[in-house]
Image (cartoon, rainbow over the protein chains, first blue to last red):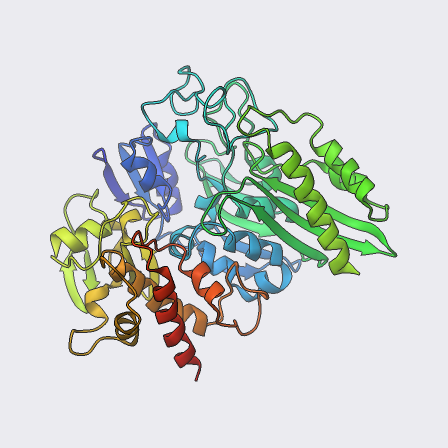
Length: 327
Length: 169
């Protein structure tokens, strides 16, 4: 690990000031950042420890929703009584990721900011436009099994690796952000960016900005499913994952909030997919139509071509299960 | 007030270099070599310790981040004469071959039993709420952060299952 100056940030304002500098990063749980620092993918000159700043509470909001402190751990969130009862897709998504040791340390804010597990990004001897702009993308014609099929660019085909944010996207959660210009809120669905020509920009945080919380809207109930397809049954990243909040009324879909992991540089949400289901009775034909819309612009890169049919089948499985559970 | 970490009840001053991981602090600064370094990237679980009662990978956290915290390592769990219930069960069930992963396995399982007692669900749990039914599948999922390259998994699961079942009596 390269040498760095360590500062325990005494206040949110001070933390913002510390990390506004070019060579500085905030550290919370650190499970992803320290891994990357050991690999010298990240070499910050200054590290601002934000763990003592508070905002670790999970608390009810005035409108019946729930506010997850950015510094609450993934475990504290997954096992919280209200998350388990009112937002089960979120508990399930968190529990499907990483290991208990990692979830016990990793924070909600840090989870949103975690970096891709693309092999070319994490290996400093390989080209990567994300890590070293202009060096090229090794994955496009290389090892690309975990890589994206939607929203890719000729600069980068990496995926966002997380599970938590996929559930937050289906639930329509909002990210609360604090910076030197004040506070702002961004829907989770708009928080992460597609790679485009700037794959090193992964989310909308500006220099000095820190996530302070995540707000879940009032619970909507329904059948909630998080289905994660992976190469081993525990401690593996998603090839494809789907977070679904589904309701049927009089035999027809009356709610279909869907988000997808493992497919893109961000948790994928396509309003048209859910809209295609609304008002319709469940059928395999309908599920295929939803998959057609979702995968209209999907593109494989050889090794990950399988993700296109896998996504179609996983969507069908989730909607079939939701239909059965709702019956 | 000098920054300090308490390990198994004894308080130690913080290292000067902020790069020192909690794992290296334990092994190289205060001489507690029971906690093992396997991958040093949070993948193998050999470095698992409990911080304020919660199990974490000590390789993926800086000692400097743990001012005032209380750490429990394998050295704090039992003695050769008076092993903990899990340590005894690992011996009885032959829950290891080379033994390198064992301190991490036992620290991890010790905290896992507390998580079970608190009815925290896992990915393998049928329901998110209520009592968790103890099973081999539950234990495997909850211990997936601890690898054993000798492949002593069957006996590790048996050892943990016996202690977990005993706790329920």
